[in-house]
Length: 385
Ligand SMILES: NC(=O)c1ccc[n+]([C@@H]2O[C@H](COP(=O)([O-])OP(=O)(O)OC[C@H]3O[C@@H](n4cnc5c(N)ncnc54)[C@H](O)[C@@H]3O)[C@@H](O)[C@H]2O)c1
Image 1 (tube, protein in one colour):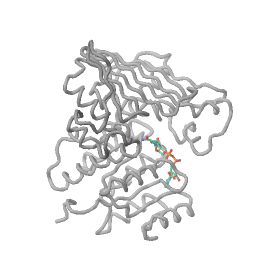
Image 2: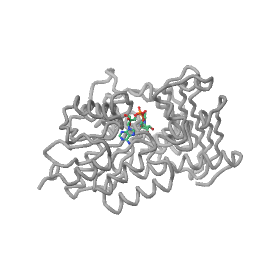
Image 3: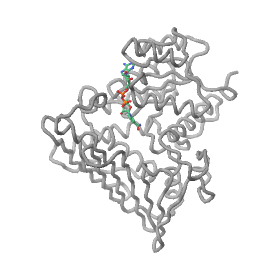
Image 4: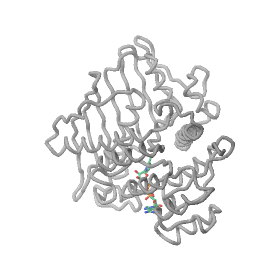
C-alpha cells in the first residue's frame, strides 16, 4: 500500500505564473524542502503565461490547466494524482479554489485569507472535517524557528502569566498611492472586488492576529478597531489600530499600516508576562529577545544549543547564516507533510500538535477581519468575539 512514507509528495498549484509574487515563493520553498514534486498547475488566467510557466517547470502540457476546477476533476481520476493542492491566487478565488479541491478529495494548503467571508470559511472548514481532509492556511510567520521558540518558552511558563501584548506590522508601499500613484500588480489589494471588505487588516493585521495567537495561545474575548482610509478616493482601510481584551484578562494593542514611511515588512511582537517578556521581529527572524524579570534583555540566536528541541528541529543551517521567509514556508510545508503522512498511515495526532496553521486558524483570521469591520462601522465600539 502507498502510505506516502518512501516517496516525495506530489502537489499541484494554482497561481504563481510569471510575474506573480507568493505562488513563486511557495514553489521555491517546496523545492527547497526536498520532499515535494510539482506535477500539475494552473498558473495564470493568461493563456500564454500559464503555458510558458508550465513549460519552464518541465510539466507535461496535459497537466497544465486553464481552469482549477477542471484541474481538480481531471487530476482526481489519475492513479498518480497529487497528494495535495496549493492555492496562491488573490483573495477572490480562495474559497472557490479550496472548495473545488476539497470536493474532489484533495488536501489543500491555501494562502490567507482563507475566504472573503466568515460563512465561506466555515463552509470550507465543514467540508474539510466531513471529508477528513487537511486544509492548511499559510500564515507564514509562525513558520520561523524563533517564532516556534517563543511559543515553546511561553508554553513552558518562562515569562509567567501574560498581561500585555503589543503587535505591529507597518509597511509604507501605499503611501504614494494615498497621493494617487499606481502600484501595478499589488493594486488588487485596494480593490474590494478582489481583496474583500478590508485591505490593511485583512492583508497584514491578520498576520499579527495569527502570530500572537500561535505564540501565546490567547483567545480574543472582545476588540475595538479604528480603521483609517488615508488619501482621497481610498476605498479600503490602509491603517488600523485595534485594542484587544483576551479571555485570560490580558490586554492587546495591534497596529498595522501600509502608509508608515520608512517601513518594509516590520512585523514586531512584544509579549509581556508576570515573569518576563519576549520580543520577535520578523525582519530579524533569526533572533529572539528574551527578558527574565529583573534581568538584562538577552538576544537568543537560532541554531544555538540553548534553543529547545521543538523549534531546533526546524533549524537547518548554522547560526549566523540567516534563514528567512522561504525557510518559514519550508517549515510550514514540512509540518503539513508530516500530518499528511501520519493521516494516510493512520497515525494522525491531534492537529494542534503539528506546526502548520490549520483551517481553524484560517477561520479565526477571517472572523478577526469581520469583527474589526463591525467595530469600526459602528463607531469603534467594543465587539464581542
Ligand atoms: N503569507 C504571506 O506572507 C503572503 C504574502 C503575499 C501574498 N499573500 C497572499 O497570496 C495571495 C496572492 O498574492 P500575490 O501578491 O502573490 O498576488 P499576485 O497578483 O502577485 O499573484 C496572483 C497569481 O494568481 C494568478 N491567478 C489569479 N486568479 C487565478 C485563477 N483563477 N486561476 C489561475 N491563476 C490565477 C495570477 O495570474 C497570479 O499569477 C493573496 O491572497 C495574498 O493575501 C500572502
